[in-house]
Image 1 (cartoon, one colour):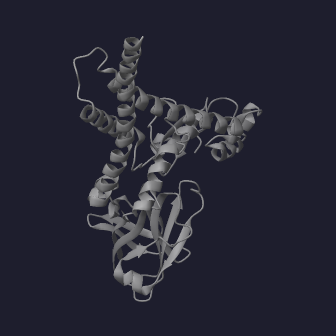
Image 2 (tube, helix red, strand yellow):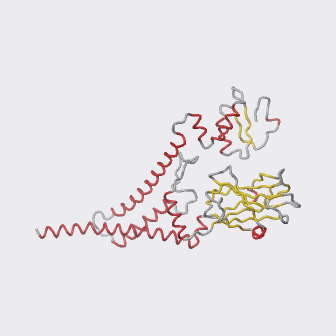
Image 3 (cartoon, helix red, strand yellow):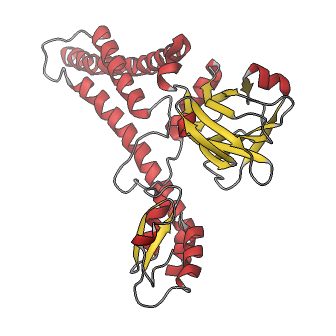
Length: 359
């Protein structure tokens, strides 16, 4: 009887110790993963993960005034009818909380002129925000937007508005957004946010899942890969491998736990998308669903356009500032079965049109 008890105790110890060691290795893997990522960013890794957003002059779009693109930048020669010259360029949906420093390089600013920084966010692309730049800020060429209440979310575009007239051409070489190193507490908050944030719908969601929010500093897949590697290394250190059956099961368990964590996050993201879809489209007819879609305002406009087109398919020329972009393509789709051509940014030459065409 005593021998049987001792055998059972040894068997229990054999299974219990590896379990405790595996749990300790998993916890140590979490700590090492967090410390490694924090040290990476604190040691200068932010420049690799979040490089500056630089909009060169030749990529700036003139939306007010007259000018021309030159090899050294955008040259503005005259203000618009309202007395302002305005330029803007893409900001790569930079996270405002991180990209707080705004730099610019301009030549030919007249003394005492009024200059405003303008921007739009991803959440409100039709609502421009602006901030006046003081004379001291213009001379310094840098602005910290951390205290600006409207500088939040993801920045879709940045630009400048300058009041004319101009005694000489105004040349804008580039605009730039640079990240500011977050504190350790901010990095920890960012880490948690990257793990639990909802990706939302995009135009490629049906075919692609990024597994992380746009511009994530702590991609969940990377975090899980580091955790598996550190945990497996610690377990091997705590429990040197012996030639016994089942010696590889703890490592397989760590891999499956990491896989399961990513899968649960993905399932949660799918659930959030389902709730968002039901909120936007459930219980609505086809017309109301079109109006509730991403291009609902465009659809509303094109619905009025269709009333002025003939019943039979006609040939249409669609003029757009971005002929190959999303909105031009959606315009063609909503105007079917009319024969639409969207590759135009200006009126086609007279030889390309004929009676009965529409613009």
